[in-house]
Image (cartoon, rainbow, N blue to C red; front, side, top):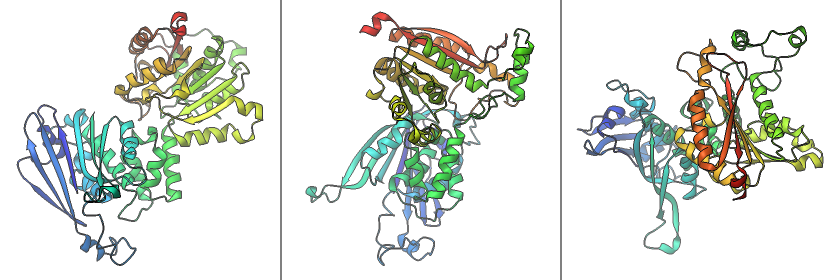
Length: 493
């Protein structure tokens, strides 16, 4: 089986440093199922290609108790394992390109953090149970352009149709370590098979290699269940941990059951802020968590603008939906999230099955992505987007803008995101670190207002801004909200 990685980054031979493999010679690696070879078909400053060729020994595997695949007597000897990309290739990536997979480069330590133009070609990749659409579903949400060319069952008999094997080409601009992590996880998912026993340690392995991207992937559940060979206990554990990873890592957003802010960091921030003297009456009132302040601010904003039909985009586990359902002013409420598991949790927490018929008719939940046009989002008066955009790659913001402000085009959009300036208040947050490991960026107030102002100008909206949370004269509030309002002229177009 053959995998090639090409870059046109200048100088392209930096690929050799990243892979820790010298382009000037062929290298051979002994693996417990065969041999791996690394060589460079081309290595110039303009273009460099590294090839990983895997020579699997099916006879050796059949004689090994750990490698035999079982089934009929001939299956261990006659199969596609030497020819098709599979979990063998994932293991080879981890063992042969281990430093690159881990984002390490001894000679050029600055290189792993750089995004490079990369093209991957896999000569024979099984796409079982999905055909050419399956690699598109798995890789496109990660920012790749995907091309999948099918292999016929037999070129001499075209009427037999195509096989389950494809030559797949992926093109994107990203870090090499991210590319290798995607391949490591998704190749056995596409093959829907693994050559080794899947135990408890596979969950940790999956979450480690899926860090930063798997939790937000629209096919997260499919990936997890296939990767773990449909071992339901392991898959449920992995999905639960992924949902948990979506929770904030800074003590500014307690869960639904927390009504009083007890976090030391928030308390000290409030004390430091210049606020009016607290009366005995106000001191007796419960202090609301920052997360709940966000939700209430968004709810009140939508209500003040007379919104009746509202979208909660990135609804997660339904915390905002719960508030909206309590307000009779909202006659139709729709929650959309990229994660199927989060929608299941939302349905459970909202007691969807036990709702009255009238209440149930007000609420719709469905899975979707904010970077793909979706006609189900059109025709709503308002939309809430609470702490969502910072989870998108910056390269996806243009697609997000078009989906929300060009295609869905609600009359009012209330959008919140963290204020990066406020991070210095959190004593537990080291300098330069974001509030959550899955955040792709965090904006200052100036950066947020610049982006939002440009979006409003391009799409026919006006925009205003409001702080959310305790105010500090030096760094502002921990969260910031932009309220986009569609102009009357634009609304009629």
